[in-house]
Structure formats: structure tokens, C-alpha cells
Figure 1 (cartoon, one colour):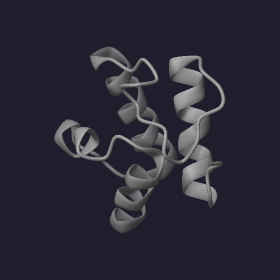
Figure 2 (cartoon, rainbow, N blue to C red):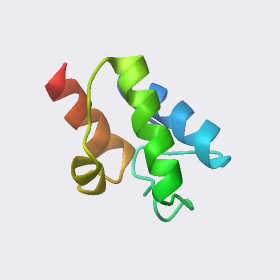
Figure 3 (cartoon, rainbow, N blue to C red):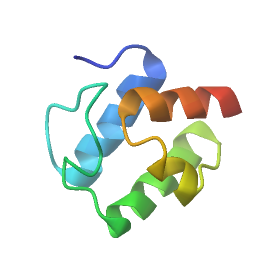
Figure 4 (cartoon, one colour):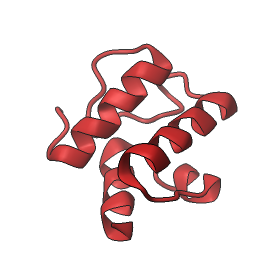
Length: 77
């Protein structure tokens, strides 16, 4: 299922850039797409820059899909 809304689309772009996979859907799981501890740090850095919010590593691992992570970001904004 394609991302829905601006936050999901922007996150999908980040995951595509960092993980080098396409397509990234709203229910794609970061770890199943090949994410690892180094790529998590890259994603968190980009989220902080792009959305001006901080997501902790613990929060990230509890929101491993685009839809869940977008919800967490939108709640912080």
C-alpha cells in the first residue's frame, strides 16, 4: 500500500535513500527491508533534520512501519 500523506511520503523517501530499496509502502517493516543499527541512526538523523523532531532509538523500534513512525512524528510536531 502506498504511503498516505506528506509525512509518510517523506519517510518513504528517507527509507529508500538509506536502505536502497523501492518501493517502500506504508506497512513496510524497516528491519524486513534490511535495516540495521547503522541505518537506524542515519534515518533518525534525517528525521531530526527534515521534521525538526527527535525520535529516540526506543521509539523507533516500537514504530517499525512508515504508518506508525509517521504517526509518532506527527504527534511530536
